[in-house]
Image 1 (cartoon, rainbow, N blue to C red):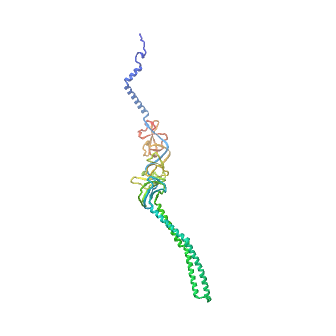
Image 2: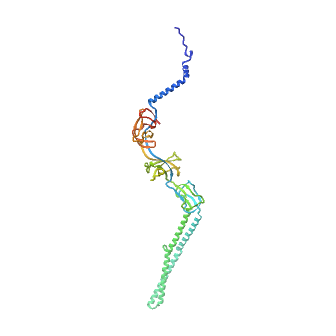
Length: 422
């Protein structure tokens, strides 16, 4: 049998690689279609054997806090209306609305020309009353005392003359006329002594003239104090530290008592006034802690405490007004600023926590969940203890780390699936 020599493939004709490449080029769409079918078949086979991928949520252990959330505004516990105590014309306004002031700081000044004149007049009355009292002490009283001494000396002489006239009349050497004259002189001397004693007494401390002079001085001093006080009213000052949230006065205006010129928000504690839906009233109690934040500074929070619950209900809004006190408010808070508060109404420590989206029949008496176990969804009865927003506390049926299937996944009990963490 005749044989032929075999040439190397690379030299004798096209190589097997080139033939394969040509075949792929000629049948590429068919090959791609076959590959796609194979992938779909593999995916279907995998899904049929292992089930679809489903996001499952683990049961975690931690603290669960239930809060009541609401919005309100900032207020001070009270506001002070500052006005003038006298009628006058405004000379200067020394502060602006929104300015922080301290106690005693002048806010406005009034024209005080008449008040200053009244002070000068009252000072004159005081000086006059003081001079009258000094005149009594330095002149009138010493003069009355000297008159008393003279009257007493005259009384001694009159008594001696009466005694002599009486002895002479008794012995028959004197006349009755001389005795009558001596008796009259003695009576006059006694009267003069009594008058001098009365004059000294009235001008001494406790006497009527002294009391009158002292009263006049006291009244003059009181008039001066009143005039000075009215002069002080010409400057309207801040009654305490705070912020002026309103100003209703300008230079040249005529002010009167009883009219509010400024509204002052005192420094110190700040209240958050919040309307709460009446359905949450049973959850609230005095002393509950809260976290608050201003809408203008949402990333900053500050503590507050529930200190007041209005006993009445606003029927038009079906809400209850509550007040929370912040002892150390942040400096950026302003009057009437909008705030949001989270009032802590319940707290469970070391609780088993799951999202509410995994609970089936949550309002029924027998809620249940689907747990991912051994590649399948298993039904498990649970007991829901506390609901807080989108989380619940489970006290029975599950353990920490169990993977729970959300209701919206549409998984049936016993169905195979592949759990994916959120």
